[in-house]
Image (tube, rainbow, N blue to C red):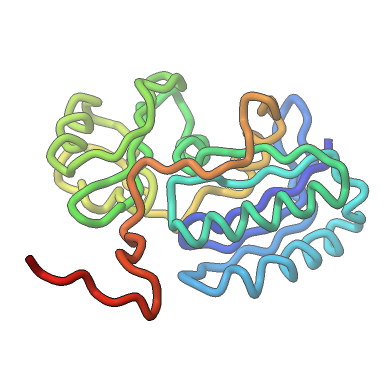
Length: 227
């Protein structure tokens, strides 16, 4: 299966075309750059250039995979909107991939315990834990002390991956830290190819309420008088 992956949820802007079989994901074309903002201006061009490098047209794609979060509220919506629009235009399924799951797949190997950790600010991380390749509970937004306790329980030799990994450098002895800006495109492609479109919809995965709050009054509306 040929597919395209789109990732704008964290610190990367990525579009890639892959061919996935039962063995792994083979890169055909890729554009990926570290990017804190400006994803909306670049993602369409990245997708076009990745398809051109792969020597395929968009019509050759069997499906599209997109990261759904957790991550930047603005960034992940850019990727979702682009992927859903492309899928609708092509009549192809669009599947959502958890950013934490993709980070864990990036770091997986040799049966080691893995903690996927995204710095959520405000003294929290978005986290999910794996043992022997299987998830050890659902993803969640954890305070740093709670996450540190889970990491200690993983024992020596664990892998900490993601933008939150460095926050726990001294917590688990012998841990490997992979402070990545985002998941590997190959991991995204592998997960997207295996996902069931019915069970993996392309809609945002929020583990915490947004920092922004709606205004309490409309523009021009007078302020409420104090009692």
